[in-house]
Length: 571
Image (tube, rainbow, N blue to C red; front, side, top):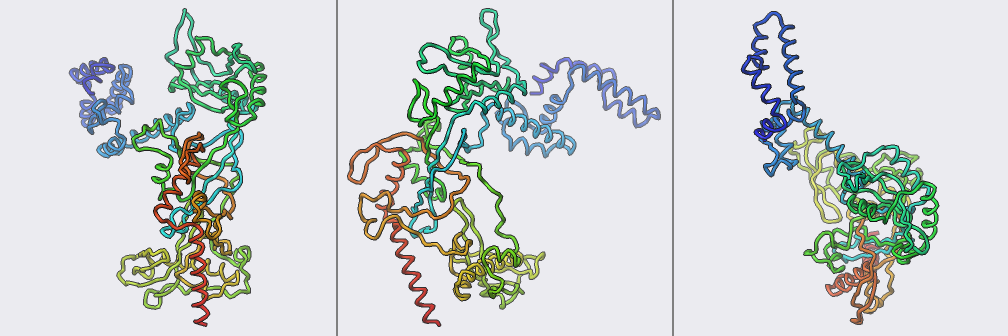
């Protein structure tokens, strides 16, 4: 790197500094002279002149960066220079001033790259967001318990999403005006044909060839600039896409597209937008599908069964990424509201709002003191996932006065165990928070009429339904005996969904295509891909003996009857 630098773009700078060193004008020689000189201003002037000469010869911050990186072993072209972790690690070998300059430059460069990628529509965060003229959930999701007794509270939800992919004329004009105001440059590598430069200019383009029987086609094309090899194209029926500049130029050269006025574009745009008001599997003319698309998103506790979901779709690990028929997506309907933290303190007003009367005797647990008195006190911890919150209750099983937590009072370690079987070590601060959460949940249950004894049963488990002060029991789709019918295999694990539909979810979306699947009668049928996943997964779990939703319901009822019987015998 250093050889190429000093004999290439910095050759003039290198020669200039060699002459300066030979003539006693190097910066170190000036600094040595400065130590024994009384006329410091004269030396400073000479140093400033040398710096000015060096800048004119090519000295700049990029050159300094290459020299500093070379000093710590980072060289361009060694096969390791693009390793960000290595780069940041080697920065530690620089002095603090150089570290500061390099870090600031790195962060600024990163921000610029991200900004350019976002403008070009090529920024990839790993999760695709469904967008369009309108996004909403079509009714309540289907709810499944696919893990039986292994994780009976895990739910997989299948949401039906109605997506209007189109772009209205008003939105198109807003995007055009925003892009026009940004004055993005065209590509540095424009093609020259017959003495004319073929530029991709941000604006409206139309395809008015006679092959289009119903209407001409229109595009809004946005050129993000020279940094990107793509342009952004927006259509009335399909919304936003990215297209290589090579393809765009070829269409312009071949006469498939031509620039058009805003008025002409808006006239075609409105007509296409209205014609596209049909399902996506229909066309208003050749190669012009409708803008209304339905998708199915698997959300909730899908991670534990992710491999089974993919296998049920027919996916193979040998398939290339570009050929995968699923994506991780985010759906946001835009109706979100600010949530109130669950760990807020319980004042009397807050308790009233939650339905807990101030006249009801509240459950109160004494603070921990660090001794045998703390053993048996109720604690709780909250686990949150995409399907809601679960509160696991437990007890303090042991206290050890080991002074491992000197910042806390008491300073020892509390050993706790919870209803899900987990055991945790906590300091006094963590235990105090757990006790407060236990008090809150117990008081919510007491307010609904549950006895204080039952509410303080530390080894009971309550899901987010307890947060609402109501007990919810699963409601299987199938009745007793119906889960044994092979023809009902898809509904064997399905339950009624009784919660509110969220405003946003992140989940797994399979391609919206029709495929072949084998039904319970061993017949080959055509079904949507998401349906094939449910069919194959259900049959697989049934063959493995996983408990159905109806069996889980019957088991929970039996446990409730047993618990009630034990409580009566104790009274």
